[in-house]
Length: 126
Image (cartoon, rainbow, N blue to C red; front, side, top):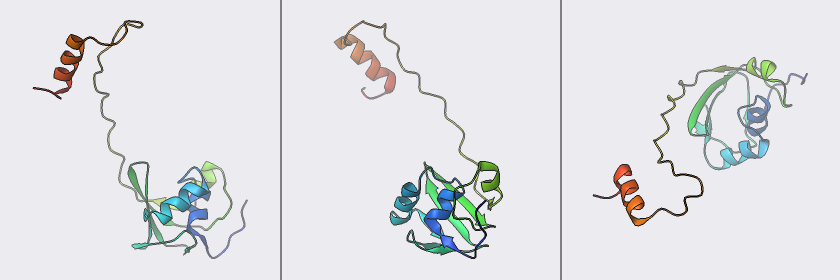
């Protein structure tokens, strides 16, 4: 298990607790302004401490976590979940997949008539 310490880099901590898949994604999120620590945008090397609030905008949703333990090495999901308190809003409900017109396999390109009916279906044309 990773040794307990007083602070760690924010990009390393985000990756360690499995909020992002890779550390480079976490660094890019910091550089892009998608990570805030206690309300302030931070660079990847910013130090996080226990009790800090981290807001991460990733994959179309915002994660809000309170740091409860500092780790710098990636750990299992069960251990990672103990390192923060999740205050994130619930994810938006999955929308039903839009009805896509189904064409027979090997039917070739749509004809002008097929294309116009698809445009009417999707409301792209009057």
